[in-house]
Image 1 (cartoon, helix red, strand yellow):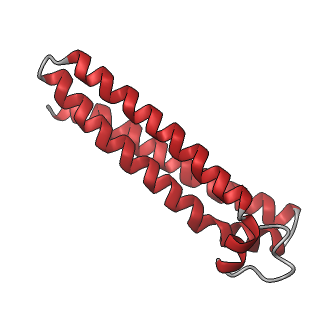
Image 2 (cartoon, one colour):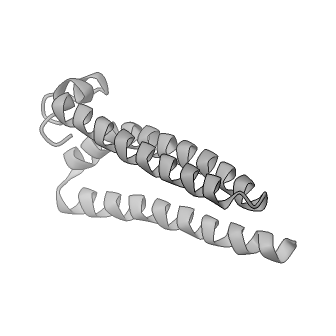
Length: 122
């Protein structure tokens, strides 16, 4: 049981570390390459990105639990159906949120606190 748990926990922890490392490396390159204004623009937009990631994780983890429950109960067709529904929901959510953010980019960034010199970068 412990071996199986670690088989799932270690890759998940590594994935989270790599995602965090990606954010740190982006910050270093932006800060050194473009300047502090670009770093400020990224920091203004980052909370929206984190909220979107949280929504996607919430749907994925909830769907994964339902899929696992159904596979464990030998209801494979129901599990596959839930997988499809979760996938469709994530695609639809992504398209809708992306469209909203593209259409209303300027007001959203202003609400998040961008100044006039950070507005084009954010």
